Every structure is written in C-alpha cells, then in structure tokens.
Length: 102
Image (tube, rainbow, N blue to C red; front, side, top):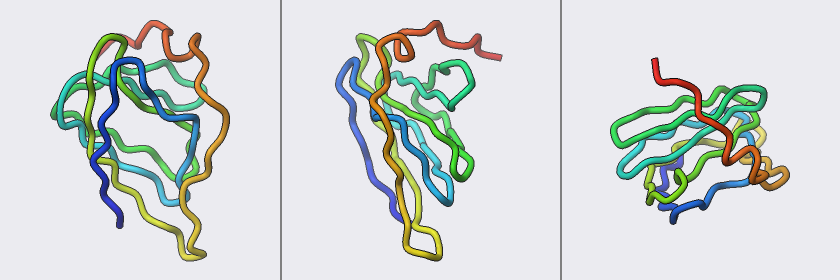
C-alpha cells in the first residue's frame, strides 16, 4: 500500500482517474470536493474518510477558495497496475452544486 499526503491550493483538483484496487482518502485539513462518475459532487472536510471502490472513475481536490490536504492510500493490483488517468475535470463538473450533507 502506498500512502501520500497531497495538498491542493484553492481550485486545484486531480484529473478523472481510477484505481484497480480502489482508493481511500483521509481528509487532514481544509475543505475539498470529490466526485464519482455519475454522482453529484460531495464536499469533504478534515476528519472525513472517503472510500472509492475499485475501477471507479473519480476526481478530488480543494473546494473553491479553500486549501485542502488529504492522505491518499492506494495499491497496485496483482499485475502491478496502478492509477489510470483520464481527461481533466471540467469547470462545470468542478463548480457543480454539491450534494446535501446527510
């Protein structure tokens, strides 16, 4: 398993991507956003844990106007394959209204 602390400046985000064995994000500070393909954007904050299932296209990054830091944990599959990268996240996807917190 690989664990990496990633810090995003306001408005920064990853491209769409997936992980063959999934990914776990533990939010360390600030406010961020995450979106799985076909779902609404979600706001995430320090202390939140996000579990991304295997082979699920998603992105994550800082919320507009906020700094954000998380611990990203993932691993290679038994073939040695890791992250698959796709297109950049559009401004429309990034700026979409987040899902209500339940």
